[in-house]
Length: 525
Ligand SMILES: Nc1nc2c(c(=O)[nH]1)N[C@H]1C(S)=C(S)[C@@H](COP(=O)(O)O)O[C@H]1N2
Ligand SMILES: [Mo]
Image (tube, rainbow, N blue to C red):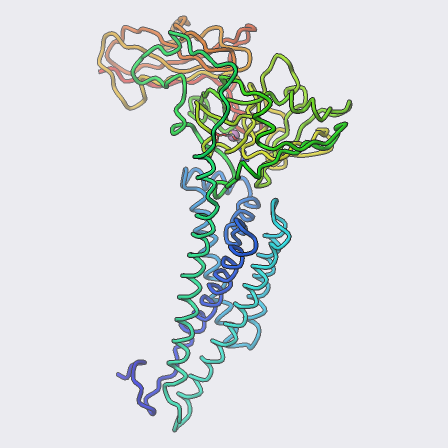
């Protein structure tokens, strides 16, 4: 059979338009994206159009779908969403290419509409610069142009094949492949290159390495006995590398501490703006605080304890002077994430809500909010612990809403006291005899008074607690148990220093945190 590689005039085959027409659409979309990435690297540093559109889609994905993605893909949920978005884009581009070949300009209009939607997503994102529209608009123009050129080449190739004595036989076919190949390769190489250069030149990593924070005036002493030393129990201080991470950021924001500013506005006497040096110049102190995510299931591990170095938020707020009538502070991250925190929690002299700049003795890791984040004892992270924070607006709960509020979570969310078993673990049988049952318990900011354990629905037994670092930090607990062979149920519950018992009634994580007593199965062999 004749093949497409022959150059004999009379043997020019008709193009398989069902393959090559969709391909023109895909190549055009690559040119659109690659072009946009290059221009973004030049004019709108750090704003990747592809990632901006991805983030936009992540934000509008309904909560059940997001939860499904987390259940199916776990920590890779964002990658899964991005791959899904990418596949959708490829299919849409292929359809545009096919349509353009059949019906002149229909595919071009579709591609332009796609470009316009992407532009809208990009310019409405928080932190979008004045020139944010330029990369997607110019990229779209380039993409549409290449679609028109490629479609014209494809049509000429088809015409050659149809003509009885094609004078330029093979030329248009070759031309089509050369232009497609060059366009696709250039778009990929240049687009990816621009992205890499963009990230590398951000060089915030270098800024973090070079950062020398003033020494803290006061330090947190971890008391002897803060760690019970039971094998299998979580350490009392969570190393940074093991600290859970939860946020909506597709890529970790790069914030340069030398250009970072914190503005305080809204219902204040004097709006103020602080630089990083202004903030740390107010004097640093250490605070031990256990952070907890509202998405932590009973028995789960979206909770961690660190020694944070920072400045009390009340001292910063005082400089601006919150006005009477205000009851909420909307904190905003550089990527547009927002949290609503009761003003009372931030100005309370007996509660150390802080702007943290260091975590366990080193500048905040990028994933944990470099260069500045909030930490508020006793409130779930989503309503208090804004990472990469750049703005506080003093306002009212009836006037402003945070990111998660319209997405099914409560506007205010104190952490619910909880306790969990770390060892023995389900599925890890232990030998009969002396077994140490141990785990963690937290009741910030009140403090854990007691932890009680019931084995096989027997009497509640008092567990031994580790020496607490403070009331804002979790404790370890342990109970010695003489275990018989067989399967056993262990139930654990905590009491706080105000005499409250951990809530027994089970609740889902939405709208304001899980509750219930953990009941785990242990096999003794
Ligand atoms: N900018 C920003 N800050 C954020 C979030 C976010 O999505 N974006 N998530 C919050 C939530 S839900 C939690 S539980 C904590 C988690 O902090 P960590 O990732 O340092 O553990 O960060 C909070 N701060
Ligand atoms: Mo969270």
